[in-house]
Length: 303
Length: 277
Image (cartoon, rainbow over all chains, first blue to last red):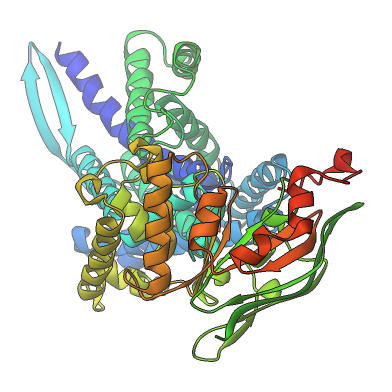
């Protein structure tokens, strides 16, 4: 019981990180119907940017952890947003209107470029970081101590507030309305005077900023990153987006939680080696019975 | 009255198919101009050239605002047709944002006023930059149009759930929310019952006269001759991409060329009707 509770906590934390990345996949898919395979690598870049910022801030003598984290969050999100914008501008926009597979191929290319860029500029070895937020709550039930660390609490809290902010942006602001309009009918949106290129750019920017937040969370949670984390996390988050119903925002978070929980529980009760097999098998089973994913109905509110 | 749009020698060729052949006509300001003709005559192609979907093979589309600003529509890219030249259009098939509410559909069309640039968008997120009064004005305008098309009670329903006739009217209201000087309507009465056609005609007459909105010239493609004859000030008849008649509804109705085109009299190449529509 206590053991299961512990897995639930771990799974939700992991699922939140996946969900945050999945939002970026689902948004871009919603608006231009392509899978941005470089998105996982933008997440990885965000993670490196966070590490650089944290080291830089400690070198500057900023010792207050909340302040350092807030500054890091802003820094990583801003620079990653710039990456997202650039990727769209140089790799996807010139191919818009080309055949459907062209941007997909350049997305894979962009993913490799970003990975190699990180490998060359930051080195291939794993980068460790000491825990910034130590401690947490412990609760002993039946001789097993359930740990809820402050890191986990802050990951869940940050993700939920990011999602709340983002949902508000999409449903309540003019920018969000124009994003939804572009998603439903790009040409019609253009005829109503909406600058569709700019709206698409902003979608990439927002998705990349959310991925950078996820990158910081990942760094805080695992304490070690390398240039390859973007690939694995990207595939998982993409799976989460498909599982939840690609194009649906709440679906992305739900899918992320599902993947996180499946992985954690499988690792805890069966074997760690086969956790990915479990996650993907469940994806296949779900897609056989619900081809559009959990929330992927035609007219759900989505971006 | 001054011409708001002057179409000069417009030609549109798709490979070997000449969809529009050196067509010239004028849309006068403050009037309703109807473009009619048999299927495949090139009417929608003309609309697609005006609204930037197609780049004409040759010819000019000169739009003149009341203030004297001139625009060469054939050279203006994408969204600036709506944003700068202020030309709005609707399609034969309904293209509302079905998942958004009726009110949101009208708000989307006012996006440029609500968020003229990225910086103001950022400020708006934090409720700064004079966003609130602008937003308030946008909502008021949307309400004005919802009232004009009789959909106030259904403002918060998804557009896709509205009855067909209401969706048609909502599309027109949405197009009007960009504050156009020229409204291009592609078969707005298609699929409407007689009562709905009547309501639509009234709405268009009120838009032309400025009783609702700021007054706007209308260019209309329509097959429903009842609507065309009732509301048009000026009718242009196309057949096989060429203009065969141009005048008041009464003149056009009695023109032998028009009667021939509609009844197929002496028309020997029916087989290669242009599929440009």
